[in-house]
Amino acid sequence: MPYMLESKLVPEKTEKRKVILFWVVLAINFASVFGYDLVIFIDNEKSYKTGNDLSMRSLLAYISLKYSVGVLQFVSGVFLVVAIVMIRRCLVENGLGDAVNDVAMFLHGLSFTLYLLSILFFYYYYYVFLINIVPSSTKDKTRRALIAWIVTTYSNFLA
Image (cartoon, rainbow, N blue to C red; front, side, top):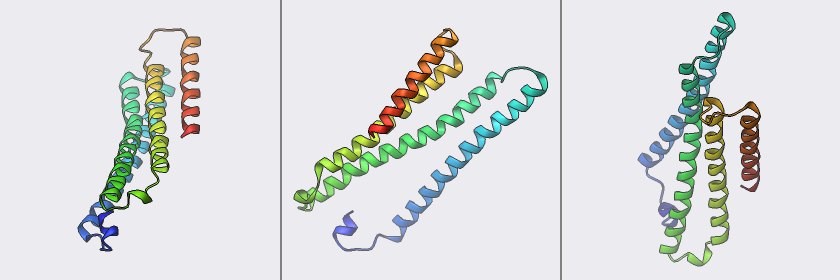
């Protein structure tokens, strides 16, 4: 933002860092998705051949890999909200405070915050559902899973 306000080019080093960060995060996302699919595929193959349920070790590996995608989404959201605050601060410091649409910036940040909260809410109930931390009947587990799905859907709709 400061470079734009001063009509300067962004330094090559800064651009290079941005590109590296993009590709690293993208690679981690692909690796996470491929990893948890692979874990489940291999464990399902073993379960099919042996007749046993999924192993707890594989289930924990799957959950960890699945949550890593959510963690990356959460980190992206935090970066977005911090960027909004920094952009607003930069504009105000440079005398452009009147040009800032505070309502639009607030709604943008709130929108992504709702999305992030829905991710956290969903993953918590997903974990409870898979690991069965709270001993309960299948009916109770299904009810909690559906409530998590409804809350997540409405949070995402509002976002």
